Image (cartoon, rainbow, N blue to C red; front, side):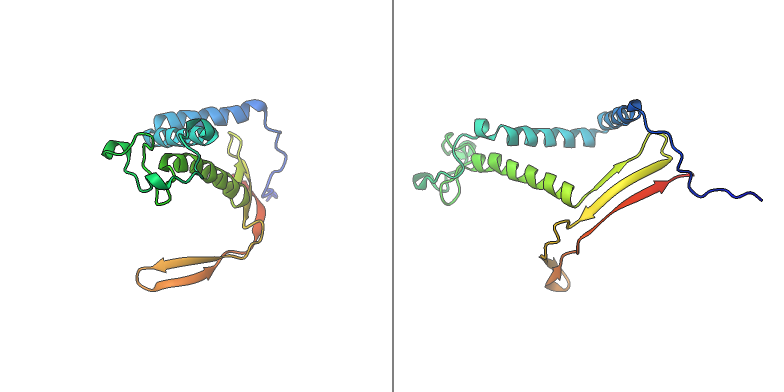
Length: 170
């Protein structure tokens, strides 16, 4: 009986073609899936809206216009100077939406970087390396949760966790 090693760590370094092949395969899968394509389109529209917010927004989102507060949207008989109407303080809703996309996109990127998983697996799928983390800044926070059957309760957030996971397929 011969000893068979559990993990063979003598892998050749991945070539540049391996990474681009993975991207090409992902692109093909996205183009085949109508749902993924629609999601990508919405994400790109929001990203473009966030990047070009100062050019797209018709008004300053912090500007208060008390004379036009609670104005109806343009298609409901309101003024087209505020296409989506205004809120209780007269802020233009379209401007708030466009500038709010910046906050949402920034928050999403930060959450992915601080509480996400980044993985690399070459085309052969013989091995995969993942780096993960959650609550990297070790902030103490509570979550207000509401369950239908039990009512409202508070729960504490997860502690700081991070690590590296290496997987090998045989």
